[in-house]
Length: 588
Ligand SMILES: O=C1O[C@H]([C@@H](O)CO)C(O)=C1O
Image 1 (cartoon, rainbow, N blue to C red):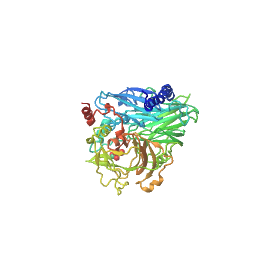
Image 2: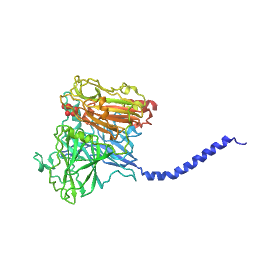
Image 3: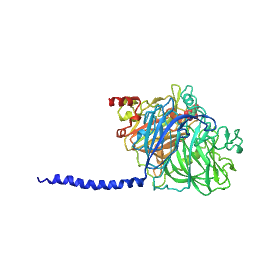
Image 4: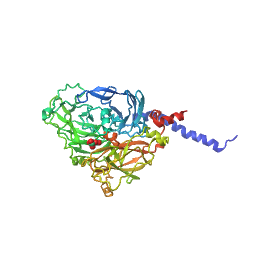
């Protein structure tokens, strides 16, 4: 039989085009792997309570594998990080959020309890597996209740991929994870916040640098008339400061991240200028400062050059911004080798700017621009929402609300319930996009009453979203506070900051030329902050004030996009609430 042309040609030609391509692919594959150098980095962690003395006072902290802060994860851009997390807490669940990692394609690994996954129960193990796609300074922390305040945090550093270079030079680096510490347990703090009458947590007892601070003594007592005595630390105590050892004329990269529960901080090093080069994993147009403001949820890299008198040591200090300080400076020493680290600096620690000098903070925030060549925002938006931040009352309890809705998360995590269409899992009504025109942001609310809710802002996939964060007066007259807002799953462009109520005439002031990409942005008292982002990461994403007690009191919203496109969510993320029932039914 003479085969027809078609039946002869088609298989042969397909064979000819596919086979060489396949062979070439097989030959190249090992080299492609080799050149990218991407690795999978495995970690096996156990979260547990343990005795620890973060500020020289023994307390109970949440540790990982017996360490506080938790182990530092170090990876290269393009690597996959796998953390096998076992909950060894006797009576509570746990989750870990990888702050600043966008979880592209892995929304179930974002580590937000009741949003991306079920809490990991006592004794259970959960597998976080995600790609760290971009170099930068990040951290991780608990995202259930107030577990971050309890000490559940650590650093996550992503180096540039093999063969890539940073756009700046340095000879060495230091990693500083900043936090604040209370002597009162977080359980007691939580009870106070949820009580009527309300009991505020107050200011922290200590600031910690890499989990180390001093409460009952000061490293710099001899310079001031403080009542605390001079520390006589031998160096092996859990609270002994980590000294930054430098060599004269070398340049160092300081990676600074803030995991504080409450405090906005200012960091300065005596006599040394800092050049700011990175924020939240994005390169900046370098600029020099004498001191650096850092809000909870933010990270920066700064370059310092050891160009001062090499026969001296210098203080590095952190102090509080935006709240009347009641916490001594957090301190460590920049030590010029080879002189001894125990030689005291000749001048006192740098003084933090006055706590309510907001102009100082605004000047800093407004100096932050993206490095030339960074991605630019789309020139228009598809949807704009305005989120008014107010302090409120619900049945006599003190709360925070967004457009008069105080967030109370549902027991079934959104990711599974939206994906599987479980409509009873949360409010189906979209939350308000705005607030009444006549609301006076400069005064306490006329009607402070608010309601709880758990609705979701659903955005079309790949649409451009503008968010105007609007601050207002709190419940008390003449009080408006700083709130750093953190977005999960994305970075946003910070288009601008302004005073009072945002209006269309403010539009002209927005920066579309070189706005920085960030995952956290602050709203100043009585001000607004304008953000733009592209909803291009299928999943459900928290967007909230990064002050732990404020989120606990309802200061957050939930965003979602393209959830129908989310590939199979691992069962271990769905083992609670309505998704557990759904799984059971569909298995049977
Ligand atoms: O949420 C808060 O509550 C207190 C105060 O407003 C009421 O005691 C405070 O300072 C907060 O930031």
